[in-house]
Length: 339
Ligand SMILES: *Cc1c(COP(=O)(O)O)cnc(C)c1O
Image (cartoon, rainbow, N blue to C red; front, side, top):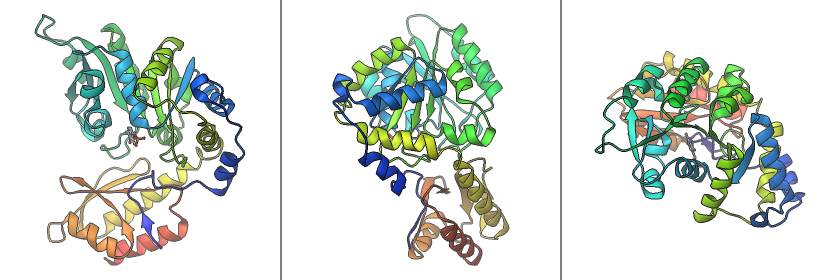
């Protein structure tokens, strides 16, 4: 038995999801003739109370399309220094959209409205790139699955509006935040110009992300998706997995959060762990003492068929998910206690 906790992307489709995929009605989505893709897009738009939605092969492409549609080459966006759009998309903001990122600091992948206010004011002469976009991430990935405070987001939106900045949410794990904080997708739909969500993370679909926005923005995104090579044909087989995920795999995210918190409790109780970051959702980040060392710890766990990820700066990451069973959970807790 391999206990793979590298990411919540390692899940394989369940029997029910595979059945839904196999039974999907499909067509050519480049001609907007795939009924299942259309149904997924309508369902997602309705869920968030946004005008339109567009199916993408990856979260990276959905984010990159959003950055591209909100900016022109030479412009600038604001994001946290841990942001996925800055750290983990291959430099795409520069490559695809030709924009620079102004990085903001702050605990656990989040910044405050005051920090954004400080970052946006300053010179506005010809030396300075135009400011066009604010990107935030909920939950935060490198920040350890932290959930933003909705009222802080409202303040950030106000500042964005006052400064003519578009507001994009990288919501790869937004449903983890919604379930944990018992928030409504419609409230998020009202706050942001565009939102990307991943179906292939905690929701357990094999492939797929969605970009949500106004009719005008999604029309631009459609052209950009084609330009990026992301327009697909009988993609309904994949969209069917997405519909199934939205119908069946949202509420159960709380089980992943519960397991992550139980792992955190054990980690706090053992002497070789020096620090455990606050755990709100399905990501656990912790540090082991220098006598063991993070790489050595990860290798030793690998010998027990338990797979963890190094996150740099001594951080070790565990991500719980749909395929992490109760039985695996018991084995992991025992192995952590006895290490
Ligand atoms: C996973 C992830 C993405 C997109 O990832 P893909 O692997 O391209 O689907 C974007 N943002 C965050 C915060 C993520 O964790």
